[in-house]
Image 1 (cartoon, one colour):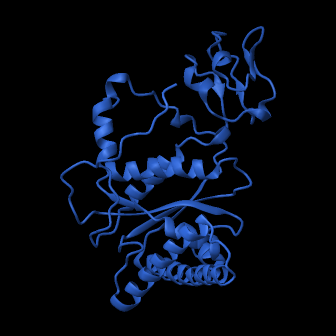
Image 2 (tube, rainbow, N blue to C red; image 1 turned 135 degrees about the vertical axis):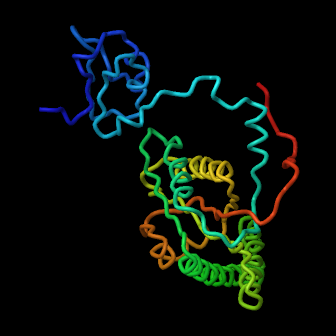
Image 3 (cartoon, helix red, strand yellow; image 1 turned 90 degrees about the horizontal axis):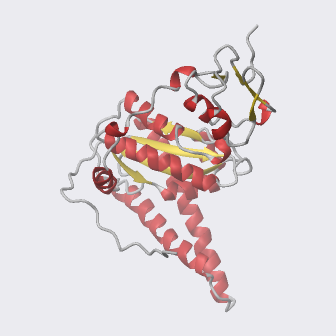
Length: 294
């Protein structure tokens, strides 16, 4: 009868010790005839043991064995200069063609996010993909209305502080700048039909996570989002992060429901994706890095 927990196949194990060396939690030890896993319930399924075993003896029932394909050789990895140029070629795109993104490309983008590192390999991150014109319009309308109301509250809070001769905190000052932009975006869409929120992109990708389940939910979402937008870039697509959507999700249970996000979850990152309608001939420039070399 097959074992349902992680274990070392004793018929395959050669006791080479490689899995013992790489186990992050030190759960593997040498036995008389094969390596064995102590307290397998604590295994975080990083897969290091299976990836280094020459005999493929570790068995991880919860993971797909066919995903442990051979790693690419150094010759097949991008060279540093080319990789940096690729990073710099990715821009925030605010002009999109009226073309839907193919499902296979959306699937590949999500796969890039799925393989991003997470704390303790717990993989609590979830994804929502809005991919039809009607649903994009629904999310846009809900977001615009939510941000407009949120902006009104910000303005009232600032007025109240000033009327009471109380200082306005730097955080509230910054939010007031955002609120001015929210109202501008709202009015431009209502009066001119100009979408300065999602830029008429055909799809939106949202990451969401239970903040109580992860010690660094924003970091995990950011890592996944960056891998996804780079995959989009490699697929001939453009992206733009939509931080204002994240503000709205925090305020609106209706918007969360429309995005399939649980009420107690946060949505740390989101971005629009589609085929660019502009071509940039030069790479991006940035301010010099501020580094403490120690």
